[in-house]
Length: 167
Image (cartoon, rainbow, N blue to C red; front, side, top):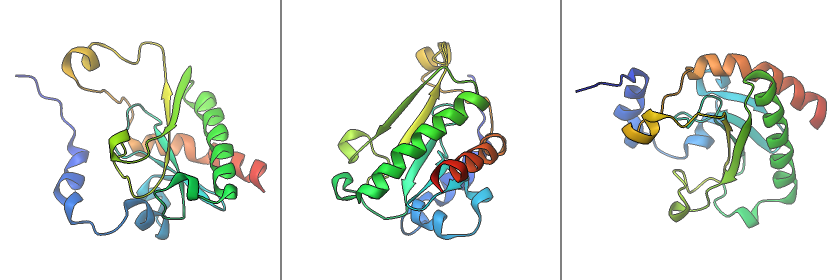
C-alpha cells in the first residue's frame, strides 16, 4: 500500500466541525493575515489562499459582506472583485508562470460550493500537464508548494499591484 503524507491537514481535520461561524468572516476579522493565508485586502474584498488548493497558487477573492446570493452583492463589490481577479491573474503569471487559469464562482451546494453561505471567486492557476497520472489513476492531487511559501511569493506583488490600481 502506498501512503501520501499530508500532516498539515490534521489541524483542520481535528477541528473543522468545532469551528463556529463562517471561516471567511472569522479570518478576515482577525489581524493575522499571514497566519490565515490572506494575501491582500481591498475596500470591499480580500484575497485568501485556498486551504486545500487544486494547484499551487489557488486563491479566492472574497467579499467582506457575508452573502450567499451573488445577485444581491452591491455592484461596487462585484466590480472590485473582478478587477482584483484580473490583478491576481497578472501576479500568478508573473510569479508562478502559470499558462492559464480557471476563474469562477460555485453558487450553492449543488454547484459544488464547499462554503455555500459566503460567495467567493476561485482563481486556479493552470499549467500544461498539471493533470498527470496521480490525478488520473490515483484520484490524488499533488500540490508542490506549501501554503506559507506560496503566500510569501504572491502577497508582496499582489499588495503592491492592488495599491497601485485600486487607490
